[in-house]
Length: 198
Ligand SMILES: [Mg+2]
Ligand SMILES: [Zn+2]
Image (cartoon, rainbow, N blue to C red; front, side, top):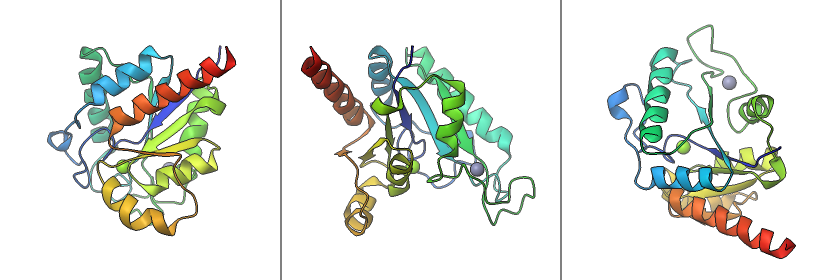
């Protein structure tokens, strides 16, 4: 049975935007994230994180640090009853100094590789899925993957909505104040559409 997914950006959407998260101590959850993830869990959405972590290719931190952060992220949420179904990240960058990761890949957002990977691991109903993020590249990713994109005003969001979004032809379907607001909007839209079918 296919399930819809909400693809979540990480930095600035789930945790505070602090530049590169090059140490676990820099990972700080934004308010309302637990409740947002729980709400999506309860409404049958897969919750999947898609994140660019080019700091690996740039040599700013090892890939193990990314795994450590993700283990902490998942465990902290799980303790509070919120389940992250999957995490996919891009460690690459075209100008990266770490040879193993320093190339032009097809998974650095807004390229769609991370979503393609998620679709290989999960049976996803893409027609009812979303991307939520604080940057326009997340909306571009949504567009390229034929999904609806929602921008949050946390992280870079407020500035991007004000200064970047007006120049772009590809727009989010909704601008939310934060992840919990986005999750409530998604669930409300799904319920309205189900009522329409009843
Ligand atoms: Mg972000
Ligand atoms: Zn990549």
